[in-house]
Length: 197
Image (cartoon, one colour):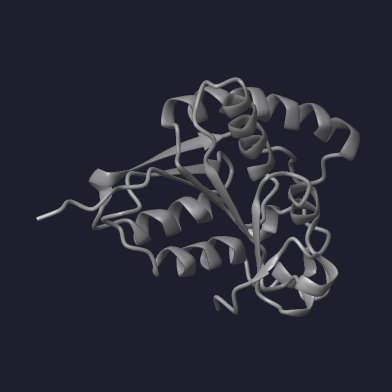
């Protein structure tokens, strides 16, 4: 009997309340943790025997995502782990100072990405993911890891335009999936996958 090939997967979680890389936070105001909910809807359709081990990265201040992760993974704790990382931008922080905190976040995630060496990175909105994407691409350019497949799933709240995170990632080798068909007309690099929620 052939054993299934496994895919080491890095999952970046972040609740909508803290998505300050998004250009539209109002959609999340009544749906705290929306990005995390969408991510787990996506993960629920994957085979846990294939997409393992699962490595979660969560901002150190994001208690809601950590709680939801524990609920989702309660039966598979042996095939997952979690790392809490620095947030790229804090609530109320100026955009100028966020440049420095984003750089700091970038340098702190490099050793984690190097240790994990993911084959797949799943992200879906929060600015927390930007340093991780850059770190993984840089490490692959330096031939320190194999370049992982990076999949960005845009939030269902983004109906007419991509979030700032999505706009940045469209210039990088990232697969961008959207939940509204009209976005593919405005952003040719995106792919329509239907609604997750």
